[in-house]
View 1 (cartoon, rainbow, N blue to C red):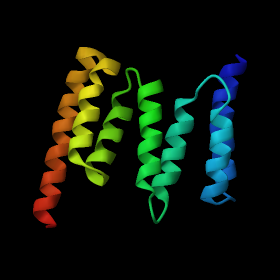
View 2 (tube, rainbow, N blue to C red; view 1 turned 180 degrees about the vertical axis):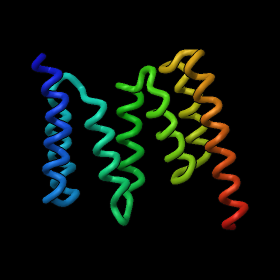
View 3 (cartoon, rainbow, N blue to C red; view 1 turned 45 degrees about the vertical axis):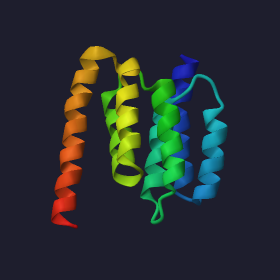
View 4 (cartoon, helix red, strand yellow; view 1 turned 135 degrees about the vertical axis):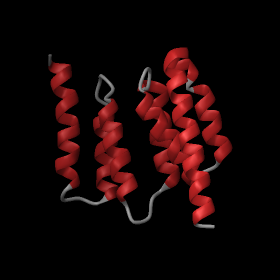
Length: 135
């Protein structure tokens, strides 16, 4: 039970700390909290949210966080993989997003990968539609 409590309160503490501190201090705390076992997927999700909320998003930092959480804790989590792919597709390079999509099969299995395939097609069509509307 202690590890479950630890998982919950790490995320709550990061949220509380984030209300009164800057991103440098939040990153430092994240690193400390992330070193506690067991690993906490939600801690990564919260940190990604903080990073993405900044007026100047550090794309490399967000990509690194997504990479770590998906490949280490993303087994069976379609939403997490889809968010990673969408971020890369919209902010980095399409070919990187496609490579991430292909590598997710190992972490999702064939059935869930089929669901992600539909999501990936939606991401591509949304992005292409936005390019047509806002050239």
